[in-house]
Image (cartoon, rainbow, N blue to C red; front, side):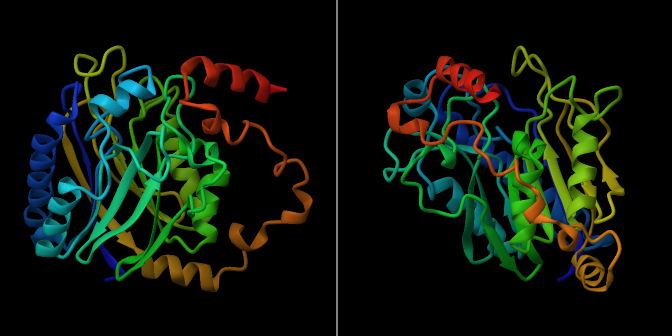
Length: 326
């Protein structure tokens, strides 16, 4: 189970106006899982299937109240149950596209959440720690003073230790390093990374960041990017380019950049990650960190606990960003 194929599945759905669109989307993605696992069976065992951010719903409304009223769901739910049945039947692990989530434990908040679901059920929920400011008004665990859950969960599975983060999180090396320091061997990116910061020069941040996070953490990366066209999510278009990257930053497989529904399959070698982490004394960035020398990095920047003051707003995001610049 330590050498297998992963499938990064990018979607191209129309902009959802309400949660009533979610069941059909889930049904379509369950079909994509079948296509990936069964269709590529002659070439290897697909054991990990990853979907992009906003595959179920996107934060298209400007207020928390509208998101809660029209799009947000609790987790687990009937949709995660359907994924569990598919994972159990096919013996695979599914990193879902993101949901907009409400949790009675945190009233007044909406989270951008992806679930890791395996044959035994729901394993982890990852809630986006770095919303894309100022437009995203869903909450980060960082915004909640009473938040007592691990914001960077890692699952120990038969296909390796899996850690996930969402889209903008990946532009913060500290976030992905947190997953690696908890043992993550496969780093999963659930993303909606739009043009022009996509998969082609001159601003191919998508490719550069995926490769850099892999090599600096000596970990595999499986990254699924949104493939929606501008007609579906105005004003943004997403360039896809979903990819699988090895522990040295090599792109092993990539969907042709450009919008549209696509499935790209590539190898994941957890055995190689473990061997390299055990063998290397050079280029072992996890071991070579000099934490005591990093005097400025731990100092606060973006204000914490802001959800305690009420629902997050675009204006509040901009005001806190201005303060954090100082």
